[in-house]
Structure formats: structure tokens, C-alpha cells
Image (cartoon, rainbow, N blue to C red; front, side):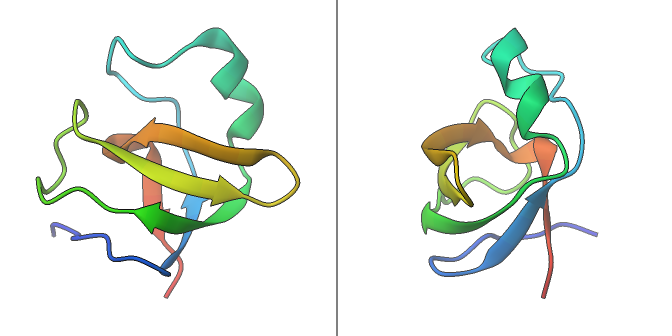
Length: 71
């Protein structure tokens, strides 16, 4: 199943990304919830980063393969 993220959608950072853009500090985001601020049109492309506002951690661009929809 593929997910197209949309602006305002609630998501969870549920796993470490296999993408090279994943940085070690992002490991601390696993398990956090957030809201999609700026979605990308590419579906499930780990190199297509989406902007997510994470609760208590600010806004970050994260690879899509690290996210899952909560709705």
C-alpha cells in the first residue's frame, strides 16, 4: 500500500530511513508525532523529503520511508 502525504496530515516517525539524507540526530525523532507542513508529490520515494512539524522538536525535512500516517 502506498501513501500520499497531504498538508495537515498527522504522521509518526516510525523507523529510521534507508536514505542517505537520514542523519544520526534524527534517530531521536523515532516515535514522535507531527503534522505534514509541505508534502512532496513523489509517493514513497525516500529521497523525496517532506516537511514535518514535530511536536516539541520544530520543523524538519524527513524522508518519506520514515513516516506513516496516523489517520
